[in-house]
Image (tube, rainbow, N blue to C red; front, side, top):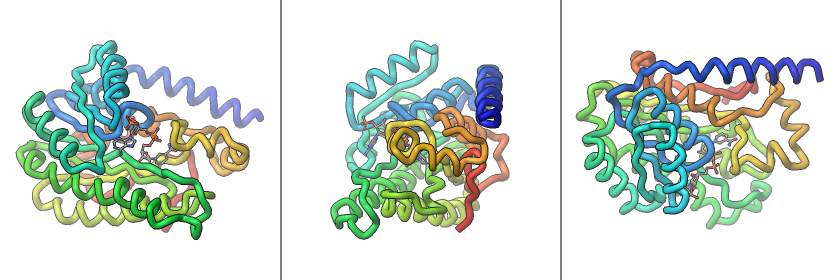
Length: 272
Ligand code: NAP
């Protein structure tokens, strides 16, 4: 109990300090996928606060509009469009719109990730397996591939892939999702080594249990107490905890880092 409240107080202090922001991303243009709520929204906000021009997107127009209003009300330089990352024409439009509005691209954050059904591993249907791999893995590969013509024109291009602690360990009812997130760790390494000679950095973030719609079952459901007991820092994460890592990786402070995965889990160990 005492440890838990100390953990929370420390977090509140850190959160208030983090309102003092540096401007490491001034002059840069960023795309963040699935950025109308959750971790993606947090990353878009932070990149914008650090000076980047940010193109946000997700599948639903109403969500894009609402998120744009929120970000613009903070004085951020943002633009938005519909993009279901699983649709080729949407990804093409996302890149074209970014070029039109902001003139190029420096930072690509591939954040979209889904888990459409919570089942035990061997109850996963072929349809669900394909959907998870289409959105989480194939769309990440394709979006990176399609963004290269723009990134190659940038002076300091950087790609960030959002994997998960679930890529390192299995979670109840998330089996296929866990496998897809492990695949992203491999995609990160191959993409980073392939693009390093061109000066395009590729890195990955492995969030722990972060309080968003996707993970509600883990931090609010019957297993919430069990989940909390696995976190040495004794709190679930906030989107902002991940946004800070993304801002660092996208910035020139990470100029010699590529092919790396930063795991932000409140201390849950990661090892494959
Ligand atoms: P979330 O809260 O479920 O994210 C929802 C966002 O994704 C919304 O903006 C939604 O908007 C958009 N979205 C959903 N499907 C999409 C698609 N096919 N194409 C484009 N946008 C789509 O999820 P999150 O927790 O923020 O997760 C973000 C990333 O972090 C994912 O890759 C996830 O696997 C990873 N992650 C999350 C956790 C966690 O504990 N939350 C932990 C580790 C890793 P629309 O409905 O308008 O499309």
